[in-house]
Amino acid sequence: NVDQSTVTADSASTVGLVGIYLINGSDTNTISNNITNSNSSNGIWFGNSQYNTLTGNTVSRATANGITITNGSNNNTVSNNDAGNFNNDGIAISGSSRNTISNNVTNSNNNDGISLGSNANDNLLTGNTSNFSQNNGITVTTCSGTIIANNVVNGSTWYGVQISAGSNNTLVQNTFSANTLYQLYIEGASSSDTVHKNVFGMSGTNPDSAVY
Picture 1 (cartoon, one colour):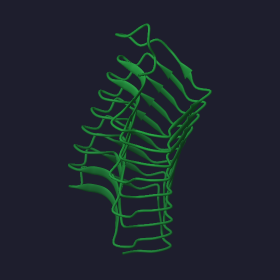
Picture 2 (picture 1 turned 120 degrees about the horizontal axis):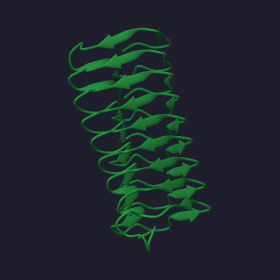
Picture 3 (picture 1 turned 30 degrees about the vertical axis):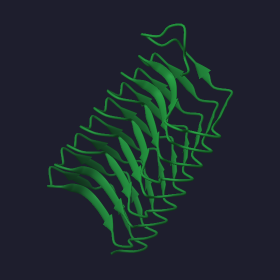
């Protein structure tokens, strides 16, 4: 592990599995203004690492996810990154809580723009833009306490946001437009979710219904 270090203005492209890798309690680091491209797994990976700052990075074209936060990687800040053109998700969070995901751009990913799953609880998604995902702009599965605020989701092949089997999640002041099936889709024993002051555009295949 490595703590209290800075990685900035570097390039980690076509290097093998992961461009930048923080694991095993690598805490309180700053990863800024780097470029990762065409790695065979993930662009950037946090595993069991906390209180890190990931900002201003350009991450593209890996075979899995752009940015992965997993295995108890709590209290990290991921902001102002560009994560696009991945085989899976632009940003994927699982088993990690209290992360702030803000002002990122996730475009043209083959799965989701931003994905939260497997007990990724109490995370904040704010000010992000997700365009042209082949699945959903934002997916929240088996999570609670997620705040999704002031995001823009446009042109997803499925849903703008899909919430499955979640509870106490909040969607406020987001803009959803031109997502093909529904702008917002809530399913699978989800409960106590709050949807407030969002802007919903027309759905391509369900023009009479924005929310399901």
